[in-house]
Image 1 (cartoon, protein in one colour):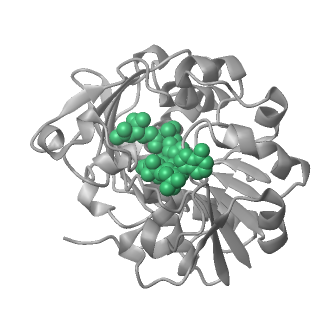
Image 2 (cartoon, helix red, strand yellow):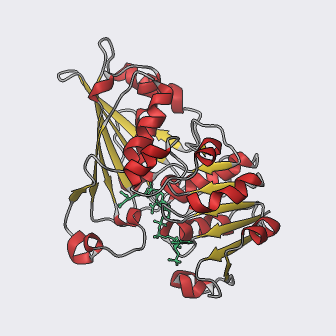
Length: 338
Ligand SMILES: NC(=O)C1=CN([C@@H]2O[C@H](COP(=O)(O)OP(=O)(O)OC[C@H]3O[C@@H](n4cnc5c(N)ncnc54)[C@H](OP(=O)(O)O)[C@@H]3O)[C@@H](O)[C@H]2O)C=CC1
Ligand SMILES: CC(=O)N[C@@H](CCC(=O)OP(=O)(O)O)C(=O)O
């Protein structure tokens, strides 16, 4: 089987390249770029011993030479590229947010860019791997959205929360912002610092709410804040909510165990709250919870490696599901420690 990547020179594209090169069912990885005729070594110095060249982006050639295309491009790109692949029913796994939101107006409001055509939005499948079936065009979830949705799913699906009380405090390392340098990604700014950003306007808010509403249509909104912290990889989500009367720590743990005991890439640890370090360089989402009977509030902590479970790892998980492979194939199950 051959796999194509557009965007290999970016952070999530590079992580994807490593996974696909080591995947037992992938014979060849073909790389395409808007800046072709470069060796991979020129595009990503860490890959200087790898033989591939970046080829011209040509949808017909991509479909002729590959079985699947991964798009690891920024928002605003795949909305322009998707239609030719959808018309041909050619499998695409899109790491960007372009086809995650079902309503074009919502995309335009939160991303401040023109949306993909409504027909394309309708054909894309939201790819939260633990809960959604795969389609031919998979809109891979956002990194914060993945960690948040996995933290809240059992509680929201079982209707155990006061739904207007959900507050999500999410923290991310810098690799989540991609390779582009900005004012806030200089070492002098990020080092020994923490900064809340995109408060009440983060593009993952509508994505999270859209998915939560498919699970519980009484939910209207969540409070969601993102903070940049001085690490390279990793996301920690702390989700707080008031619990309906009658539930204690053990009851909540039982619900999480029911949902996650058979999920290969979620490790629920009861009242032991996970740390970002526990999942780095793996495809795991680790989750723990603590119920406070004094305030009637549950805290659920979830951690992921944003470049793996939050991007390329979940993309390969979806690839495995799409082609009927074991969900764990080609994915790292041993985190880097220390
Ligand atoms: N980083 C993360 O943790 C996560 C990222 N994502 C999503 O994955 C996508 C990629 O993110 P990330 O890897 O961080 O981004 P980067 O900025 O690191 O990389 C972007 C890649 O896209 C390529 N690219 C940019 N513009 C175009 C274009 N017009 N046509 C073709 N290729 C283009 C770049 O190539 P070049 O500049 O060399 O031409 C580069 O390879 C984004 O949509 C992001 O939101 C999702 C979850 C987590
Ligand atoms: C630290 C950091 O800047 N993170 C990015 C994560 C975006 C992302 O990867 O998600 P999309 O695919 O939805 O754009 C952010 O907060 O926008």
